Amino acid sequence: MVLSIELIVAAFLLLAFLAAVLSNKLKLPYTLVLVLAGVIITVVASSLTFEGGSFQSIVSQLRSLYTQLLQGGGGGLFVGLVVPPLIFEAMIHLRANDLRAVIKPSLALATIGVLIATTVGGLILWKIVGLSPYVSFLFAALIAPTDTVTVLEVFRRVKVPSKLSTMLDTEAAFNDATGIVIFTIILSTIGLQKVAITQTIFSFGFTLGAGVLIGLAVAFVGEVLSSLIEDRVAETILAVAVVYGSYALATGIGASGLIAVAVAGLYFGNYTMRSAMEPATKEAVITFWQIAAFLGNSIAFVIIGLETNIITLSQSVVVIVAAYAAVTIARAATVYPILAVFSRFGEKISGVWRNIAMLGGVRGALSIALVATITASAAISQGDINTINTMVLGVAFISIVIQVPLLFRYVRKKIPQTDELSKAEIDEQFELMEAHMEEVRNLKTEGKISNEEFAAKIEENKKKLDELIASSPNTFETRKIIRARASALYNSFPKIPKRKFKDKNKETKTKSNQE
Image (cartoon, rainbow, N blue to C red; front, side, top):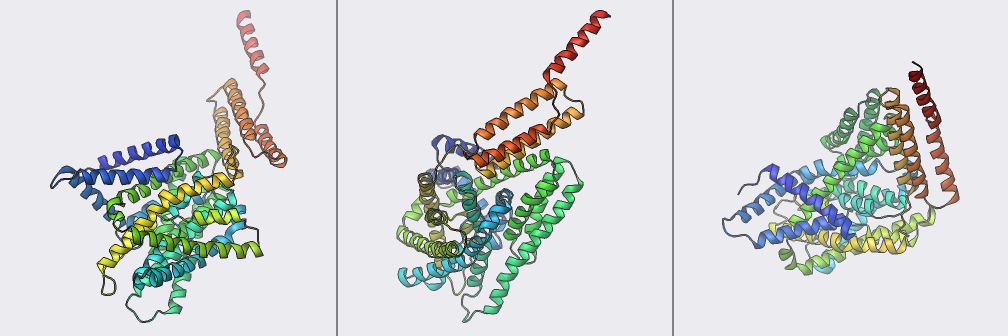
């Protein structure tokens, strides 16, 4: 039985839909539901296989598709196609004020933190667990960065202060470059007697700096082009071009494509969408990237689930538990000292925030993509590669299935979870409502709706504004600001009293009767 691409896509979309429904019904993280679904599919398919039978063929095709997705340096198609939209969608929602407040600890975690985690984790696995130095430090390097896909999805669904979410989202977006550079350096120097320190520093600086510059340049060009067009579809396609254009240009010259996408997303969200886009276009672009991020997350976590063979992992439970312990200790050695330093000499970072940052260091799809790029050589055998692969899959599985629910539970316990909207959510709701009201204004100007319909729609939007105010954080100053914004937005539209409509109708009827 040969699976067609159409059948695979249809099955995937159905699985993503069912996972979303179950996630909402059972109050479970969407990521957890997808991973467990992939695991169950793998276990059931494996248990029903028979030599030459259709189930064996299906499993083989899925494995082959997975291998093709991860082929190529740095994770192949997975990193090149799936990850950029996830980073871009998260970055366009980050606000410059929040980013300025946490940019220093974020970058410290994303650079120095990854180096510390790699060193600590590698030493534990080498000196205490007894693995070979190559296996220990290769694994530590590719597992050290928190996974972009997992972290962005987790902090999209768990309610934490916007600054904390911004700090961890930024760390996840930027630490991939550090992790990939360190991983590449270790992989390329296996078997060599010494490492060129100067060349290593230059390589890291170029990877990071060139990625930032390309992201800024592409985003600026995108802003200029966006100001010249007013078509929603064209501007949405332009945003897609900014994402993949920045990634392709950066990777093409050896820089970090993921850094370029992150910077482009920050620029796009804080400048282009605010200055060069009409409100209705902005709403269309936001909706498009929300859908793209949902599909990207679904692909990533289904892959983790399909690749996780519980039966095989159970046979290596000792080394997996040891690896997870090493990763946890390495994360603690990174988070607590770095955040303590910034808390002492900068803005205070509470113990609860540090604990959330510790639990928020989940691993997942990127590490699995990187391990697929390791090939056997004289210095590292296929057996060593299998050991690393097993540890990565085991740690990713534990991280998502155990650590993510613990994070959700800890946040609900330590941070009040109310129905009130955060400032960022309020800003986004106002922007979408502004886009809708602008569209109503255009319809009225073009004569496509009557005065009565126009007044009714404005009144309907006023009720929604009142509901938004009621859902805002319950402080006097905040509500005062929001009411002022709501009043300004509502008053920007011309008032057409309903009495005038009635009077006009009466005048029309009177004239017709006289005639």
